[in-house]
Length: 381
Image (cartoon, rainbow, N blue to C red; front, top):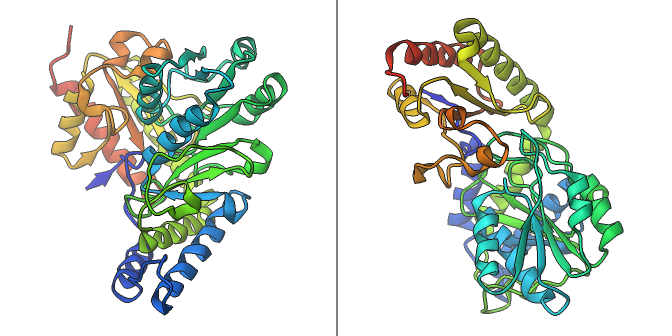
């Protein structure tokens, strides 16, 4: 089995599985309880918060735990809009964002907020000039992801932050860092984002756990009412074992970051070179050369994405036709459309996403399987 769909989810580290299982059995107390079991659970929670904060150079009190990246993004966008609506209703975003952001903004549009989309280039990279031009006195929120989940493009978030703070200092800047965490260094003090979203299962942690970095002084309206957990910003009994697993996975991933990215770079280059030798102009590379090393988006001439995906699946090679959250919709990727990739290539796009456990032999097998698919499958017209 060859798993090249690590941007959809990653296999948890064995150490993480062991930790989560042990805590579920031995330290199952509610972190809000006043007795000793609750105090021990709270200590685990706060140590995890401190560890995760250190990885992005934040303060522990700036970390709010959530059920995942989607909730963190929803909380950031909807919570900011509600908190800031008296100051304006203009929101800027890119058209290549994850559905968690785009659907949240669509919901806000129905509530009377004005959503304006920034220009992007052929790799989905946001135009800083357009950002500067579109900032207004009533702009309350700017949303730009750090790494595009389909193309692997690294967005200029630090430069965007400078423009936002110079042009409209009161505007809140949210960065979806789900695909960036553990792949590129993230320092919230240098980036100067107000909000940043993260997910555990993208860094070999458990599913159902995420976090939102919230700069001190940032106002946010809570989405979930209840017992006031997580600094009264996110109520609900806290998933202490999952959060501890997130903390351990993130720490391990950061220790391995350079080595993992070097391994992914070698695999990516092997696939690109192999396909160039085997199929030449019948293959189009959609990802930028300066993107993250673990994502490779490509198109094979004449083969629909789903057809190629299922052909590879028969050989137990698992890839994606785009974001795992939207690939079942059977429509052309909104990211590839926004990037201006021609329809005949966009309809043929697949995403390969690697991790440090993948090998060059797997890359060679994948190239061979794609070459076989091209020779055997009927071509679309």
